[in-house]
Length: 409
Ligand SMILES: Nc1nc2c(c(=O)[nH]1)N[C@H]1C(S)=C(S)[C@@H](COP(=O)(O)O)O[C@H]1N2
Ligand SMILES: [Mo]
Image (tube, rainbow, N blue to C red; front, side, top):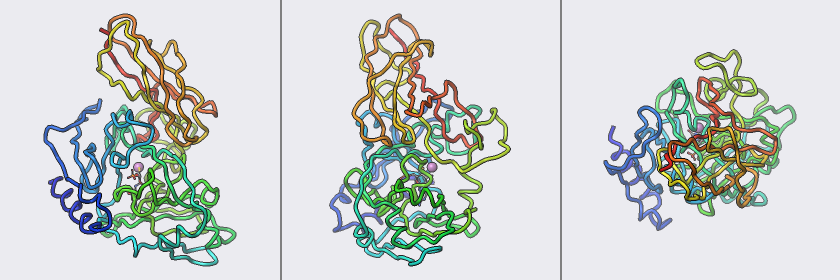
């Protein structure tokens, strides 16, 4: 498959669609340099860097539909992930390439007193606008590190990002429609469609309690500007603390239902072992599973990479990020002796419980030789990252303590 062609086609369509709407489209330059790759630390981990419309070169997982990961160095640029570097994930080959925002409607149907069909302007006028900084992380982020390997896209740590979302609470919209008593879930659908009959549509569902909790948001802006096309323009559902699979892009249909939805992306895909660790012994099949839901606590060092050399006796300011599902980060610790001793890092500015939390720690490499540098976060519920990866067949919800192998010289 010629990635450049795909990118060019999409680029051209987006360009035409946006001509006269935003000058930003004039700067789109599809770009694919043969020499530009990023290497992940597992087998077959070489990824091409390819620029799609509105995106800087990102790591190509698949071209159709576009599945792009954020190069890890981006997470050291700042606590908010820039829109042009934010990862992209689609499931179906028929993703939209042109959307007339004036024609876009969000419908609310099913077990409601008053079905709605809202334009973007009507949606914005329904109630108070809210803002929240929240992490969008794919359930399969870091799957490539699963051992033994599991089926699915071999993802590094770049299928996550942190942004400031602006929108209206889902609750406000549902209340306007009037949810009937006895409703159990809502289903969520965007504009993408399967290419072949028989392929399941990408439809997700959440419980009515979560839908009405005030947490989920229908967002139209990301980091203060419109949502990039590939991230769900013109509107996208945000569920702070929940994995990205629920964050339906190009949101167009909400249906309130009186039963548990059993479509493919709830009943078959995106499920984890139904136990506390969401894990099973390596290589085994879980007896019982449940839909994946909330993020687990994680942390990363962002300004040093495995394989780098550092100088003995020269202090370095280590820095990085930590996050969880919304209880908030209570502490981040660093170890340079394989986890025997830990030292507390200092937490940075607090942008809210659903955001990446910055941290930093001065570290002075001592003896020359190889060092296993580790970072571990704990949240306000007292949950901590496990020392080793917890395995499940989907490679979902990975959150083992990160270890960088650095050489002290
Ligand atoms: N319409 C639509 N929304 C979708 C998906 C999709 O395939 N189609 N994929 C989901 C998954 S699994 C993830 S991880 C996130 C990724 O969001 P992003 O592409 O904006 O980074 O989108 C979610 N929303
Ligand atoms: Mo995902």
